Image (cartoon, rainbow, N blue to C red; front, side):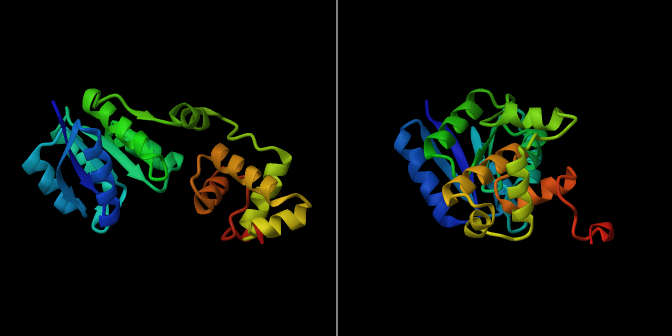
Length: 215
């Protein structure tokens, strides 16, 4: 038996890449595509696929909201959330929307396919690569434990410095700086600088520039 799947992403090239990846497996059949929330809900209602792949950011709304609507009306349908903004907030948003799996867009195609297979078999069992770490970060009353050097790097990131400038200021190699930045992102559950800084401000690790007391 083949698994029917609908692909939802506003970038046609990404949909084409996903289609090729799934069709190469031999056990998936792409029965529909959509580039918006509205079109996605229509295709899902028409095709009733086994699995839907949702991008988070769509031109007419959130893929997480669309996933929630699909879950409410299709309790046995597999739902995979695929996003380039792979921070903890997005992960828990996917979990709360009723998704079956959460995968960052920079993951290998095999990870996306594995997530879709999981979603087809266990649509109500949520899976994500860093789920345990995300749960630990959310439950920790003291927040992420950054080393003194990682705090220095975080502060310089907040000042707008790039890898080369941070390396020069701290007298370390660019490779070492990149490792520290990667660790900071990992501990904050962030996928990029903007997410890391927002999370750090929320946790009080760096000052909010809009706070008059921080000036």
